[in-house]
Length: 70
Image (tube, rainbow, N blue to C red; front, side, top):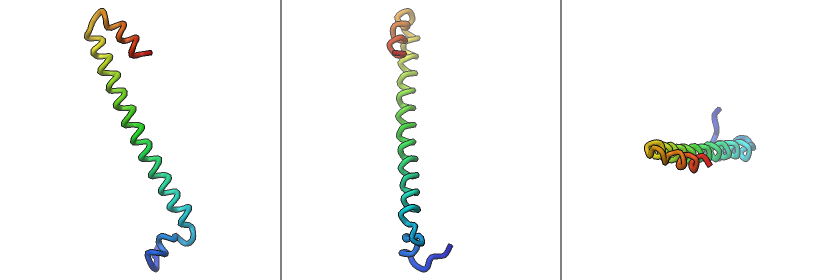
Protein backbone atom coordinates (compact mmCIF):
# COMPACT_ATOMS: atom_id res chain seq x y z
CA UNK A 1 0.00 0.00 0.00
CA UNK A 2 1.04 3.53 -0.60
CA UNK A 3 0.18 6.28 1.83
CA UNK A 4 0.01 9.92 0.81
CA UNK A 5 1.42 11.10 4.17
CA UNK A 6 2.56 9.90 7.57
CA UNK A 7 -0.71 10.97 9.14
CA UNK A 8 -2.59 8.81 6.62
CA UNK A 9 -0.32 5.92 7.54
CA UNK A 10 -0.96 6.31 11.27
CA UNK A 11 -4.71 6.73 10.63
CA UNK A 12 -4.82 3.46 8.65
CA UNK A 13 -7.85 4.47 6.64
CA UNK A 14 -9.94 5.09 9.76
CA UNK A 15 -9.09 1.76 11.37
CA UNK A 16 -6.11 2.96 13.41
CA UNK A 17 -7.62 1.98 16.76
CA UNK A 18 -8.11 -1.64 15.67
CA UNK A 19 -4.84 -1.96 13.75
CA UNK A 20 -2.55 -0.37 16.33
CA UNK A 21 -4.52 -1.86 19.20
CA UNK A 22 -3.94 -5.31 17.72
CA UNK A 23 -0.22 -4.66 17.35
CA UNK A 24 -0.04 -3.31 20.89
CA UNK A 25 -1.89 -6.26 22.38
CA UNK A 26 0.27 -8.75 20.47
CA UNK A 27 3.43 -7.00 21.66
CA UNK A 28 2.18 -6.98 25.25
CA UNK A 29 1.39 -10.70 25.11
CA UNK A 30 4.77 -11.59 23.60
CA UNK A 31 6.62 -9.58 26.27
CA UNK A 32 4.49 -11.19 28.98
CA UNK A 33 5.23 -14.65 27.63
CA UNK A 34 8.96 -13.93 27.56
CA UNK A 35 8.84 -12.81 31.20
CA UNK A 36 6.91 -15.93 32.25
CA UNK A 37 9.24 -18.27 30.35
CA UNK A 38 12.29 -16.62 31.92
CA UNK A 39 10.83 -16.98 35.42
CA UNK A 40 9.84 -20.61 34.85
CA UNK A 41 13.31 -21.43 33.52
CA UNK A 42 14.99 -19.77 36.51
CA UNK A 43 12.75 -21.64 38.96
CA UNK A 44 13.33 -24.95 37.18
CA UNK A 45 17.10 -24.50 37.20
CA UNK A 46 17.01 -23.68 40.91
CA UNK A 47 14.90 -26.76 41.67
CA UNK A 48 17.24 -28.97 39.63
CA UNK A 49 20.28 -27.61 41.46
CA UNK A 50 18.60 -28.28 44.81
CA UNK A 51 17.74 -31.79 43.65
CA UNK A 52 21.32 -32.40 42.55
CA UNK A 53 22.61 -31.24 45.94
CA UNK A 54 20.05 -33.45 47.70
CA UNK A 55 21.12 -36.49 45.68
CA UNK A 56 24.78 -35.76 46.41
CA UNK A 57 24.03 -35.63 50.13
CA UNK A 58 23.31 -39.36 50.12
CA UNK A 59 21.09 -40.77 52.87
CA UNK A 60 19.85 -37.34 53.95
CA UNK A 61 18.92 -36.60 50.36
CA UNK A 62 15.52 -38.26 50.62
CA UNK A 63 14.27 -35.69 53.14
CA UNK A 64 15.59 -32.84 50.99
CA UNK A 65 13.90 -34.32 47.94
CA UNK A 66 10.57 -34.45 49.73
CA UNK A 67 10.95 -30.79 50.71
CA UNK A 68 11.56 -29.86 47.08
CA UNK A 69 8.56 -31.81 45.81
CA UNK A 70 6.17 -30.29 48.35
